[in-house]
Image 1 (tube, rainbow, N blue to C red):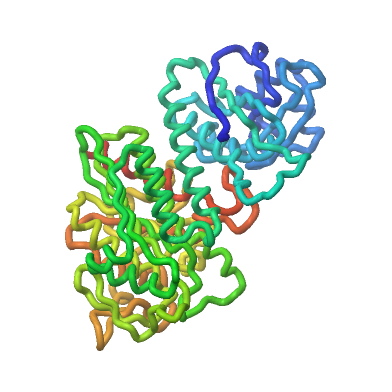
Image 2 (cartoon, rainbow, N blue to C red):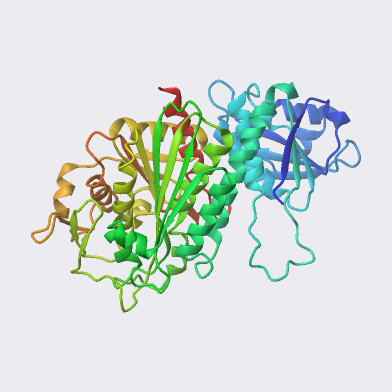
Length: 504
């Protein structure tokens, strides 16, 4: 069961928990206290900061220091989490607080109930800061144990509940409901990404997405191979042709009351990517279980939008296939015809994401949306350019920049990328309308963006989010980010949709 979250405005001495979380900053001459740390310090007779300093605490970001209270408070353990140096105004950004809450949450394995005093660090507990503490706490407590045949007897389970200390409980009820909804949506996406490809093949991903959609009250449609052929989805069929487990197209629609905008979401759903006949190197191929993270993200986002009841119409179009080198796999030198009639010469079967996305973008555009947002683990070039934590965003300038701004607010780093016109020439083909991958590898992320742009109708604002690195963490956990599926970019997509609603 996911942990619960609640709020209280009772004095800390009247609370009871297995642990209490406070924040400490890093100053030029030592630790900096915060309102929460001050409250616990008074409860412990003014000895908290000195004890933390004796234990070597510096207040660096995400630094964790634990100390016992020896019966001096209604909780046995204090967890002090570092916030780093404050901003010039003495405050800490919501993202710093979010990551600190996540780090504390991960460090609290084995502690069932937790009281956190992070909501007021460096500033008033406004909605943005409260969301940061709540999201960080819940997302940091995530774990995926579905494939453990037996859990160890000495396993330390994540916390089961978080209680946030705030000035007035009545004022934060709606905010906590939103926090819960966001955390549940991110957990759904993480679960899907973490499920092995032998169990999450195309039909199964479509079925799980459809089930989540129906539970959220969405209208759902799933196209199988026959329907895809009738619908002229040549790209999806080509990529899925090498697998014995056929491709699917999932469509999920939410129609909010008094909708102010019509938004199309598209997400890449390659349940496993071997590279096809242009096969990938064996090392790290197992990470390609995450190549459906974009699909999972748009499934989670449209369900989240429905749960929040936003005044918008959103349709998620999700192309799903498994890219394998079977006897019926598509080949380099094949020409694929897409739903809109365009023909593409295949030069690399490992550039398959853009192939399935092209068909999906064509279908999504037929609904005449006001905006189109697409996300995918599209290129290794994204990691080369921006690393594992920062996504690249391309598309219409205004919408691209709006996505990046939303991402910055909610702590999912993204960077605006250009579509230089000279790179488009690398897709020219003397045989077909274009090729799917250019001969050299320069600017690979941007070339992929150019390919997708060819299928977006003129005048439709669109943005492509390449989350190849951020969607799947192959390194150690950090902040509220676990190893494996991260749930990126659900929170950015939600924030962007809310911004688009507000602007109309």
